[in-house]
Image 1 (cartoon, rainbow, N blue to C red):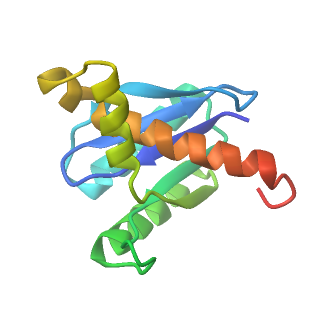
Image 2 (cartoon, rainbow, N blue to C red; image 1 turned 120 degrees about the vertical axis):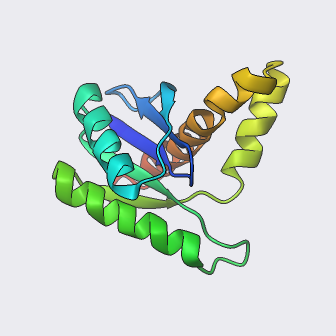
Length: 143
């Protein structure tokens, strides 16, 4: 199944997609550079259609203690909008530390400055997607 992952941010939103066999998560560029939640939802739905996605995984920014704050509420609202507009199932996925992991990946690859800013959120989305795909492999009856 092709799955689109979303790392929602205030000014940039990153996307990643997996292949139909769910083995490889690939960042989608360019990132969405919109502030309006409605416009972000429209862009995500368009990307899902263009990629042939059958499911969307949306990062859920939880606090380090597992609680949810205002940012998580915004992400849940976006998830509801995307589900309604796309007709696709939307799975909320814990995204704690994904940006830190993505930054580490980019540092290891020598990506800095403007190039880093242009892909950081999409690489974060691929980290979210990889975690979700790993979970699906180990929980096939729950996914």
